[in-house]
Amino acid sequence: MGSSIAFPLTLQPPGQFPSNMRSRDVYSNPHVQVTPRISTFRLYQETLASADRSNISNETYGVALPSACAIVPAMTPNHAISLALILLAGCSVGSTGQGERSLAQAKKILRQGMTDRDPAIRLQTIQIARRQDATFLTPQMMRRLGDPDPTVRSWAAVALVQNPHGAKVFDEQLHSDRASARAIVVGELGRLAEKAAYSTLLRYLDDPSPKVRAAAARSFAACKHEAANAALRKLYGDKERLVRHAAIRGLARITTGSNLPLFLLAIKDPYLGNRLAAIEGLGRLGGRTALKALFELAQRDAYFEALRAGVMLAKNERVQPGLNAIAKSLRDSKIEVRLAALSAAAGLRDSVVPQLVLRALKDPSPRVRLSAARFLLRHKVAKTASRKVIQDLVDSLCGRTTKSLSLCHQAAAQAAGWGDVKSSTLLVEAAKRKGDPAQRRAAIALALPLSVGERLAIELLSDSEMTIRLTAAAWILRQSR
Image 1: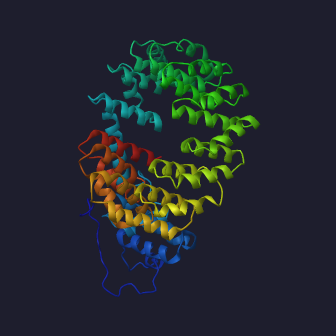
Image 2: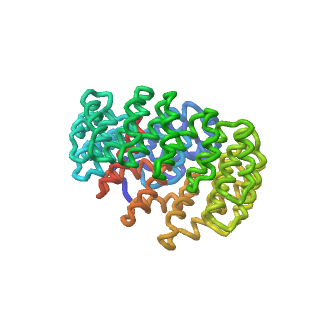
Image 3: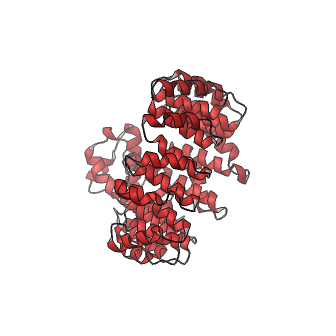
């Protein structure tokens, strides 16, 4: 593909550059013309030769980097140049004329998202504005306080609760006849108002909607009020599993000895999520009785509970039960158990753990092999073997069935991270390909953090799907900060 910007590509005749000439010599020679593309490539060569940034002269770095940054928005997919920019700390969006234009386009798209006919698009835009504190969208957000969709209206009120009009709408939504609208503001109230929220939250203990009662449980856990524990204990007795789960998760965050009997009861709850939350609560409480219960759980054949108990014991400086549970779970016939073992391994800080994970590189499941390889690369163990496993997964899974695409893309993102051009190209193509929306969004999320991310985001600003344009705009806005 050609560049959208025409550079004066004044190439030098063969032999113009002596083999021993470094980029700083080129810049200091008034008789030599070097275009941004050539200067960037020479900078890349020098970077590789010197192995790291610290060995490159400040003169070379300071003079060449602006030219390197200038070509980012328009360069063709050249992995060598992209890698050079990453090695040299890169260039942020908005630092060049093209970057400023892209940022302006991203802001325009976000403003359009606020007024889109689809409430899901308006909601996505509000969430982007909330996460990134995008104050330039405040005028458009204010208009959403009167949005016809109650969910959009509630999230706009949450975002603008410090504004008098926003606070008024927030209060109105607390009394909305739509349970979904009430649940949003009730669920955020504890975080926003902390202790001052307690008395208001009490009225939702008996709300007719289980979604609202669950939201109240989350808010009680966040409000930091000394009486919140009693309210959560009451909600744990709710008949709805959704509410009980929110309550036990909240109780697990409160380290008070009065919850010990409840946790000991909850580890027998019929719902796995509640049992795991209770185990977490025991681990945070500590103490002889709680640790004894965790030791017993870690030795059971109930693998998920054993693994969680092992991790909590490790946090209480008792590592061996967790190691035993991981080793045992990695031999289980169920893929989900082996994956859970690898997840638990990430919670243990012990030199023995990577040795246990090594065997999973030969697991029959590609999902388990990929998870094990990622773990080992993070811990800088068996680097060559782990990379080979990932590269083999890219070669064997990509281009086969739709079912294997998600795993293929995850492996490709890992390989692209260490410089595999094929994997990087594969992810970019998947990010552009129209098809399964969920697969495409996942591919975009994996591709944007890579060296190709900036160029991809700029291209996606013109995508036919508004939700994709918003994703690209949000990424560009974040990178500009």
